[in-house]
Length: 265
Image 1 (spheres, rainbow, N blue to C red):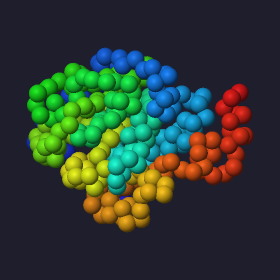
Image 2: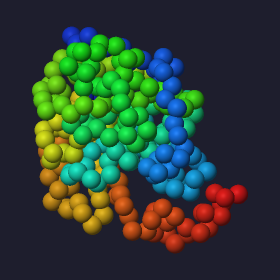
Image 3: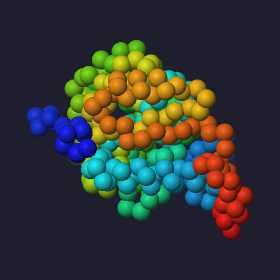
């Protein structure tokens, strides 16, 4: 696979909207106890539960750098597989990497949940931007922590979401994502692939996507069908969520207690 044959190439005649960096955005203060209740552990490298996301971020960053990717979607075949949980923790883990700018967009306009995962209960969201009711992304975005982590939520249910993703505002936003600095990684939390056609439309503008599969629930047919539906956008890998081995031994190696002692030191 070569970047030129598989990835989105923004149109030259499309004026991109400016995407603010994290330092231009108001700070969203996170509540550690609330994050713990939502199992958002990617911000804390000392938490043993963050180890799986540290490993995932390394693989994602390495693959994206190898293939010249910048904009990555995260989806699942069906609802409730945990894609938003993975998106939030992966973005948090990536934000702890040196010299990285991380951008997290919630494009699940009908059932967006990233704001809730981070304790943000209300505000302006990306749906308003795509509708043209908000024109400056600084009125939507938030800075997370002290590092370069910019978060753009969505709130209200948008019944005409597919039409919005086919419109010029989203095309301009996609072009702006691809124009971000080389050290930027853009994560886009997408709707489930079979929920509606939003994800198919969005993926036309992405470099690739990760697929979240739920152990004991997602079927082989669903995985195959999702890949066929989103072709030719490449799937760079799958993430197995709710693995029976649990947090302390996410890969089934039987070394959970040893790693626990290491992280406790």
